[in-house]
Structures are given as structure tokens and as C-alpha cells.
Amino acid sequence: MNVSRRTVLASTAALTATTTATATASAAPRGHRLRTGFERLVNDGYGILRGERVGIVTNPTGITRDARHVVDVMHADDRVNLTAVFGPEHGFRGTAQAGGSEGRYDDPATGLPVYDTYLKSGRALADVFTASGVDTVLFDIQDVGARFYTYIWTLYDCMAAAALAGKRVVVLDRPNPVTGRSAQGPVLRKEFATFVGREPIAQAHGMTVGELARLFRGEFLADAPVRLDVVRMTGWRRRDFHDASGLPWVPPSPNMPTPDTALVYAGTCLFEGTNLSEGRGTTRPFELLGAEGVDGRWAAAANALGLPGVRFREAYFAPVFSKFQGKTVGGVQVHVHDRAAFDPVRTGIGLLVTAKRVWPGFAWRPDNWIDKLTGSTRVRTLIDAGAGVDDVVADWEPELAAFRAVREEYLLY
Image (cartoon, rainbow, N blue to C red; front, side, top):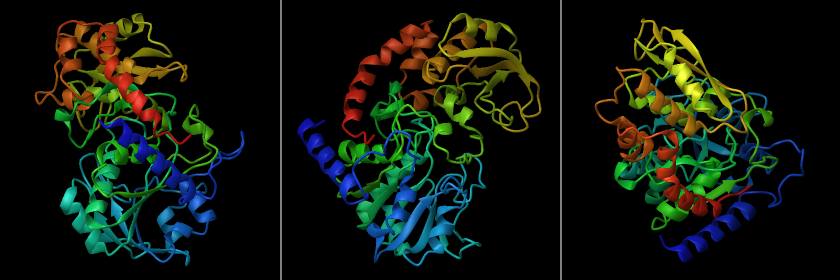
């Protein structure tokens, strides 16, 4: 990693983000209402898009404070020439489940062509941008702060493809709903790169999508001619959770129904890599975890760890789809009582360690999906070897410290 090159790129990106794409570089006064990147774009009269054909990568979370979709707002505004929409996983209007999309269609509400970006990257995605005829690709999607949430890698792929197609990318920033206080968890190793992690970032990255875009360009796409502008927010503080934003919560995906789900997701999504249910098919996905044959011993063992900010309740539930569909299973419900103290990744590791100890039926998914989620074989092999929570966490600390140092160079708030 070339430090001098990275520093220069970070400085250049910071200048662009604070002069070209925003009305002012100063942060909002304390207590001032948060304004999203889209709000600031509109308030500036869409100045940075003037004279351009614009396409937007978005989904149901691309909404205004009064719950209108940004596509509908822009389509009705003569000051901007919106000509295309690009749908990610789950689709532009959000009708598809995990691992699905909506395909190519014309949006009934606006008549705009909607192009499918899901699982497209490189030249194939560049060809979609070229075929759409746009000059600039906007990005406005609510992230949830976890490396394996695919929207940030849609952003990454769009940046790389836009460079190939000669298009500019403008990211309309939104809050990280689980705060931007710090990064937590293991850092992905490049040989484990997939669509749930393209590049070496921490499992809970603690960044906004605008900050991630800057990091992607400076660290991983430095050899590509990525033309990037970030329209910053004002009024956001890194310690703020979603409820401080005053923004409506729209599920970014079908199994992310509430901000509480997002709060635990960076840790409990690890159960996708096991034979236990991660709560899909229930009203509390990623907060309810379990399997047939699990009983109250799991909750007792997890509570005995004394993990900060969280308690566990013995729970029984019957998923209506996904793992154990229609069957009653036993497990735990995760109850966060102190958000400021809660560490989702440590909590996820604690639950894995205790599940393996108290339930003889525990197993990893045969494809070792856990390695893709955690970014290496280390978490799986350490837990299999009987390591405790502190040992597993200590193993990733050197790489996490290095990522935190790099991350600092790209923060906007």
C-alpha cells in the first residue's frame, strides 16, 4: 500500500467532496437538523448535475424526510434530467428476497427504464451504463454498517464500471445507522473476496457510504480513472444512531425491518454460516437465533460471558421460510440494553462459541460460508480449536488496527 499515493488521493478527494459537491465545507452547528446528501443536492438546485443525463442506483431506502422516493422527486423536477434507474439486490422497488433482483423493466410510476445491476460488475456493468446513455451515476442507498451487506459492494462495482464506461459517480451520503464511532471485527483477506466482501475492510466498518466511496477510490481503485464526487451530509455526528437522524426507517432489504436489526446484524449475520437459523422467516430476523434441539442452556452460557450492553433470553420460534421452515426451534433472542456499550461482532463471536459448546448438533455450513463472512479461515478454525471469545477477538486486532489507521484518512465527519 503506497502511503504517499494514498495521502495525495485522500487530500484530492476531500477537496472535491467539500468544494465541488457541497455548498459548504463546514459542519452544521451542534443541534442543527441533519441534512442528507440528497437534501443538500436539491437545496443547491442540482448544480453539480446541470446539463447532464443522470441515472441513479437506489432502492426503497432512497427517500426524503417526508417519505417520498428521490426518484419520484427528481422525475418531477425540471432542474435535473433523470433518465435511468439502476436496481441492486432486492431490486429498485424492493420486491425480491435475498439473492434476487427485479430484472429489466420500465417503472410504472415514472416510465423510467430500470436496469438490473445485481451480480454484474466490470465490463458487463459498464455496458449497462453505456446502454443507458447516462453521463453521471448517482448512488443513494441506506447502508447498515456491515461489510457483508451487499449494497456497499454494488457501490464499489459501480465505481469501477463507471470508470470503464467513462461515467462520473456522485454519492449522496446518508448516516451509518449504527454510528460511525469505530471499526470492529476481522478484516477481510483478499483471497476470500466475494460479493459479501470485495476488499479488505473491517466487518463493522463504522463509515458512511460517502466515506467508503472515498476509501474505495483511494485504496482499491487507485489505478482506475474514477471520477467521484460525494455530497456530504450536515448535522450528523459519528456517535448518532439512526433515531437521532429524524429520518424514516425503510427496510433496506426484506430481512432488515428495523434499526434494531441493523444494530445486531454485523455480529449475528455470522449464523448464516452455520446450521442454526439466523431468524429469517420470523418477525425478528438476526435477533432470534436457534435450531431444533437447542434449549435454555445456550442463553445461560451466553449470559455468563458478561458481554457488554446485551442480554439473552431463552426463546422458541417457528420460521415461516428459510432454515427450519414450519418447525419449532429453540434458541435465544438478543436484547441490547446499552447501545453505546454494545459490540455486535464480539457478541456474534460469543454466541458462536457458546452455541458450539452447549449444542452437540452445531455445524458450519458445508461450503464454509463463515469464512466468506468473516474474511478468512481464522474465526472458524479458532472456534473449532476451543478458543474463547477474547482469543478470537485478539487474533484480528493487528489487522483491525491497521485498517483503523487507513480509515481515518477518508472520514468526512
